[in-house]
Amino acid sequence: MYTQGLDQAGKGDPGARGEETAAQLDAFQARIDAEEKIEAKDWMPEAYRRTLIRQISQHAHSEIIGMQPEGNWLTRAPTLKRKAILLAKVQDEAGHGLYLYSAAETLGVSRDQMVGDLLSGKAKYSSIFNYPTLTWADIGAIGWLVDGAAIMNQIPLCRCSYGPYSRAMIRVCKEESFHQRQGYELMLTLCRGTDEQKAMAQDALNRFWWPALMMFGPNDATSSHSAQSMAWKIKRFSNDELRQKFIDVTVPQAEFLGLTVPDDNLKLNEDTGHYEHSDIDWQEFFDVISGNGPCNKQRLAKRCKAQDDGAWVREAARAYADKKAAAEVAA
Amino acid sequence: MTKQEWPLYEVFIRSRSGLSHRHAGSVHAADDEMALNNARDTYTRRSEGVSIWVVRSDRIVASDPAETSAFFDPAEDKIYRHPTFYEIPDEVENL
Image (cartoon, rainbow over all chains, first blue to last red; front, side, top):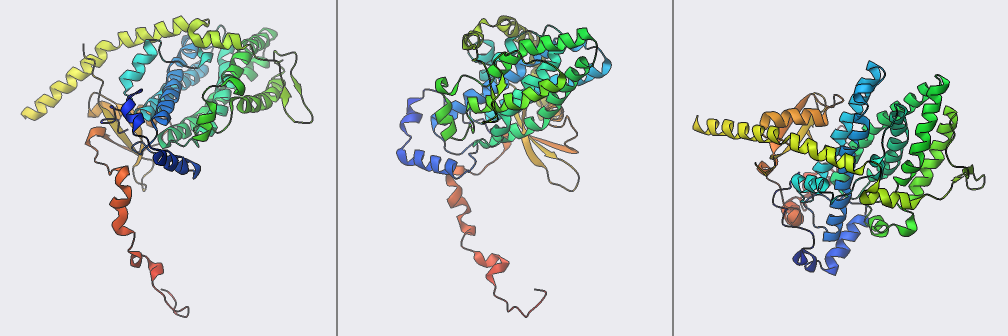
């Protein structure tokens, strides 16, 4: 929102860090503990600002890259209804990216800087979008599982201590429910169809189950940013807590579809009421995050091409605006 | 080619007539007209508004959060501006 004039607070700025006194930090933590929201121009520790910039921009990048796996099926949707739904969903993802970039900009980072970091490969985005969408059932699996996992993550973020992020998340969550429900309904339609259609749904579940569980991030024991983010109330639940919640609500949904979750060790623990599951293949997660997933190169190349292809449009719009402004001054 | 990004606009939306405009977020746009269109596409995809205001972010004049207490201080000790300041006997009605 009010980004102009905040740009000097760059990362690694020793002056900014050096000026932070214990009293300032204590007063800030007291505000957080009192559940006060922090707003854009309020004083905040540089590390809080940097953490939020990293998290919100990664979140925005994920929405923007996330348009690709589904956009891939826009021209091949089986009916006009499904095509209109998918188009609206992909458009929502673009919107979510824009809400989030706008929230990140309140922290003093420019849009150009964030987009530049994404295109150069410096910034990360969610590992899930580096998996290919091979069949139409994948569109259902993404809505049901990927958006389902995203909702699980995002609902607590609506209460995040940083006001602009929290407000963006409230807006996103309102729209996200449509995404998940259309995905589940798509899966349901396939599961009630022919044997081939049901097999296609099962195959999509097989491929997306584990990557969806990885969306919650590393185990709590190995998650590097968690403790501080919890203290700052950016995060409200740990990665493993959210992952468990997701598994607990999703397994019965799979059973209703008549599909089998691809985990031989999955079983309900009657005492705890939670499902137990196999260990996650974290090597795969770290490979995908560090750029070696099935589609990382393709996703980034496509984003770079879109940015390059649009350059003349952005330039022309700016030239037109300048010309019009000059004419108004002259008149 | 120009490296400079389009200016930032703040977006305010009236959700239905009878309510005030409320801050929704921001958009980048090359000019005012594009800012309105972008605001519509970004913030009202589900009929969330009947009216939109956009204003260049650098044109907004805002109070300084660091000066909040001093800035709003003059109102703090004027409790006589509130109706509860005045003691009226219970038997007096409609007051």
